[in-house]
Image (tube, rainbow, N blue to C red; front, side, top):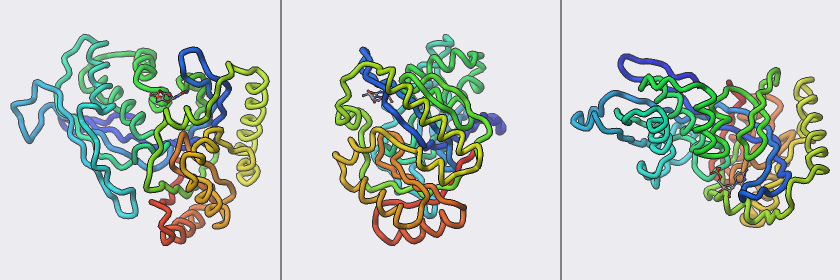
Amino acid sequence: MVPRKVGTAWEVVAPAKLNLYLEVLGKRTDGFHELETLLVPVRIYDQLTWSPSNSLSPSLSTECSLSIESCHPRGGFRPQVSIDPHDNLVTRAAKLLAAKAGLKPHGHFHLVKRIPQEAGLGGGSSDAAATLLLANEAWHAGLSHAELAHLAAELGSDVPYFLNQGPAICRGRGERIEPLGGLPHLHFVVVKPDFGLSTPRVFAELGERGALSSERAEKSASCLSQLIAALNRGAIARACQWMTNRLETAAARLAPEISQIKTTLAQAGCWGQLMTGSGSTLVGVARSANQARRIARQLSAQKLGTVLATSSGW
Ligand code: C5P
């Protein structure tokens, strides 16, 4: 995620993520859950542009504004209609950065939204991180990476991950990032059902009460290291046996379709299948780009929601 200057404007792409592993290690006293998760960025992008003035209403150029365009690329997700620019993470991130840097927010942000909401794909978090990076450049705010990471953690648990590029293990609430090099290119079938799932609702359904359990933490560290070792060896089918998401059972209690789609992905020949984040999107791991496309075509006819073939990318 590197902002690029185009004339007087700045632009950046904001990728979606998939969780290939997610374990809940306990409930914290601040109400959040202690997590251990493996995230990879995928080639599904929102796009954010900042320009010094809004061409539709140039008189607003000393104010900060945001427009959102819901995009429906061919074979992509359905356009989203209910996005409120005032309650958007882009607006919140821009205001937070301006306050920290002692600046007045100005200019016009335009967000092309392709990543669906309540999907577990990190769209809003990725937009927020993109805004911090873009505004830091466009407004010459000069904040350090550490300062941006601090603001990112205030905006949401997944936001700090998106300031970095590439796969990473995230711990704590999600804000402690350990970048991972050397992972192979992976191919996925992504199924986003026509409904979304609210993150707080799925965590509440999990009903976790225990404080951080060291036994669970040790077991999780061991599973995750087996998963990463298998990925590093290129043993993708083996790696899939270690892919798991603790939130999946809770999500499936709220929406039984989750289990049905998982079964469908397995029957279609995916090596592994799991839910990403707090859902509602299911991910199938394919052995090649061709197989991912073939399965996506086959499942598109089954009215499961939106089905896409994609791959890891950074
Ligand atoms: O940090 P974020 O705003 O994305 O979190 C949304 C909600 O998800 C939180 O209010 C909380 O209910 C839940 N959550 C959690 N533990 C985490 C991350 C999120 O309980 N590590």
